[in-house]
Amino acid sequence: MNRYCPDLAAAQAAMAATDVNARWQAQMAEFFTGLDGRRPDEGFELLDEVFHLETQLARHTATQNSTQNSTQNSTQNSTQNSTEADR
Image 1: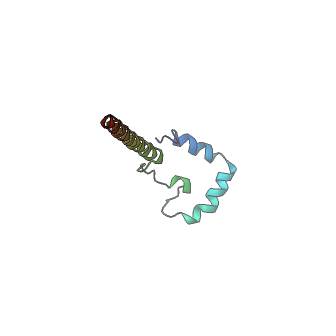
Image 2 (image 1 turned 90 degrees about the vertical axis):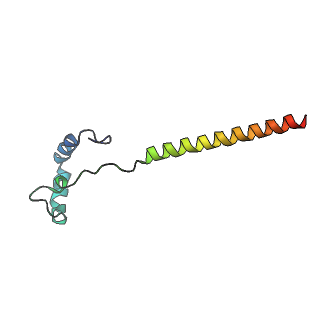
Image 3 (image 1 turned 180 degrees about the horizontal axis):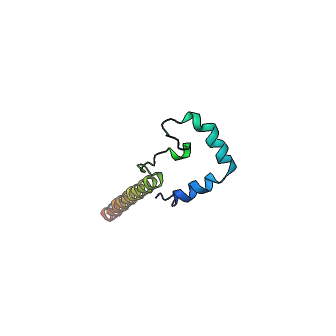
């Protein structure tokens, strides 16, 4: 199961029902090896997701925001300390 295609079997069945898919299977068959009689769309291997850009961007944004907040707090504390020292 994949979050982008929660029901792969249903998606494959829907694709198999189209004329364009039948034409594609026929034209592409010669480029796929080791299928042992299966159609090209049955010869793929599902891969585990290793990199997920949205997750990476969310982490990066959180880190950036945390760094900015730390810098702002440090600057505010430094300015506040300077002001108090000037009095």
